Image (cartoon, rainbow, N blue to C red; front, side):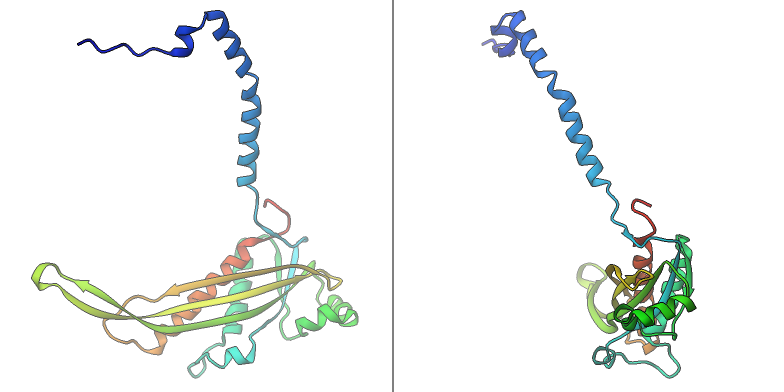
Length: 231
């Protein structure tokens, strides 16, 4: 039995003149559709940078609420999370090369600059800048963790416990203009897992995990702050 040949119903059952009219009627829609595509593409490429205008930034203070800091265990002589964050943020901002960055820690409390115009005026005279940064750590820790790994194959496979530290740090950065007005608030979280070990390692591994998590947080903050949108 012969198979019926497939046909294009629109073109076979209607005269050619009608088909030409239908095609011409649809053509004007194409530029409009193209415009819609471009609009969506432009929206998808929009910058998410947090704009802090100017060329100079000053880091005023990095704080950590005492009630949260009490859970952080430090070895003797080890730098606090605040110091690690400040040093890392200054380094990362410098590496981005979007601003000239000043270390203005120890000169004033950041909270007073936003609430006391006289304090802001005096600080601005001592440390001229286009933007002033304050950072609050909302939680920074490195906690021991365990996982189970299956090693080998077949009847000889075994389940073993491995040990590591999971570092995590969340920081909120606030930027003020030279008048003490808030420009932007930005929050980022950085994480890092230390290499898996067959035994519980020393606290040095936990300290390293915390340091790298803080560095990852500082890098995320530095990469988002820009003098102008789209840069």
